[in-house]
Length: 170
Image 1 (cartoon, rainbow, N blue to C red):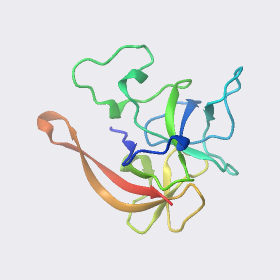
Image 2: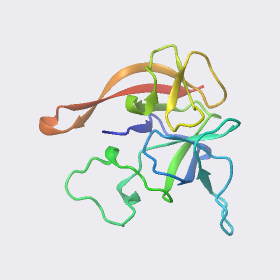
Image 3: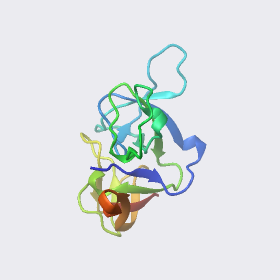
């Protein structure tokens, strides 16, 4: 399974944050970022928690580079970094949902429901996946622009694809 989530344009630096995973995460997972990790003099790493009722600030985990591997090794050959999952305690890059119209490509396996043009994606309490909703929910809502986009993933004879959705923060 491939986990794809990345911006289709450069995200403003103010919207890119570092988060510390409380459980296993993958690209496309949505986390609540309500407070900073409680370490001495920490000014930039947020606790990435499971979204819950009452949360108002969310971020989405984006695909990381190979330098993010926990054990310091670089994969040999031509690894598929979209299949990586990140262990609890890992510091990851995420993009804040809201505050700027940032376009994303998100694998459909990271979306709860069937993505359709005219619908929206929003965080849902109790899960890391974005949920398909009929109306704009709040500041962290994304508008679906295109669904069912096939992203080439290589594989045997280069024939593998992953279905994805294009969505933009409103």
